Length: 339
Ligand SMILES: Nc1nc2c(ncn2[C@@H]2O[C@H](COP(=O)(O)OP(=O)(O)OP(=O)(O)O)[C@@H](O)[C@H]2O)c(=O)[nH]1
Ligand SMILES: [Zn+2]
Image 1 (cartoon, helix red, strand yellow):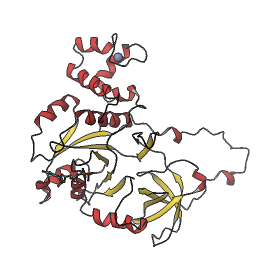
Image 2: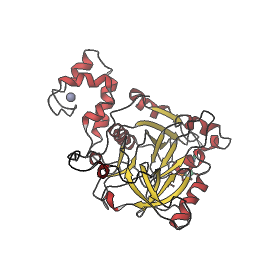
Image 3: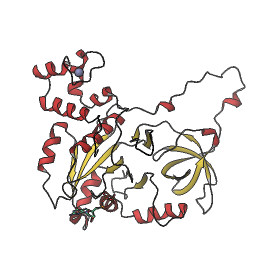
Image 4: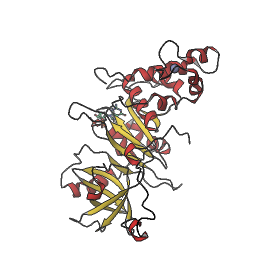
């Protein structure tokens, strides 16, 4: 599978002086060797729901983890009561190095970019073809966030009963982004949703979409067990609904080919702040252009006089439509009203 430049969280990289030789070996042995492996499914006010050996276990962060955030998708080491029984609380003592991190937008209530999901493989951008109208700038911002985070983007175009997908797909054709067109009438007999599941098999897919685009309808169709799954979470939080703003990881139903995969629903995540985006990581998703950027001025924005990409395209090394698309994406870094 194609991979964009994956990167991990800065705070995963720790430089520590080696203690070897200065202390007896027993002291450097990792603690909690008996810990079980868990996958974080959701987070609610310091309580983390983890899947541990097939059971849903509630846990909290061990103090030794300090301020390090533990997020949905994290692979963790868990100790303590792992029975999953009511009112039990396990402890997360380690977080495995992340293969990818997706950050949430900074907003008025929270000025910080925060990691919302770890270890995802792809980002499904759910967009209605009508009602509400598609918002290409918003789609572009999501694509930039995906490229930056090293996630494979996937366009899920819903409500195809209301409008054709052609015009929107034309805009995205030069980007070569995979897409699937859906509508809820096709979900009824399961045929429509199988095509979406196929694109998610064996992957960890984060779903984002603006309110009203049909994301809930889609996720419920993808994971018919959702009600039961969220029921488990509710037993933990003691609330009637899953009302947290945390993402929620849901298992795709088992398939005959054995690669199941996960869908991560993200209530309240509609777009992404792009201030932290590194141009080099975005252009990494455009290998045909990246080669031509070698001759760019230092810290080139790729949208300024002297950008070597104009020459590169003029010489026929890459399709002008690709450069146009790249520049359009990079231009969405400036936030505008409604993004
Ligand atoms: N015509 C049509 N309507 C749909 C389709 N899918 C969902 N809807 C309707 O669109 C509305 C929004 O659907 P939801 O699934 O709740 O959308 P959402 O993106 O989860 O929206 P929020 O709950 O606001 O976050 C509902 O009234 C659905 O019945 C579709 O394929 N075609
Ligand atoms: Zn350039």
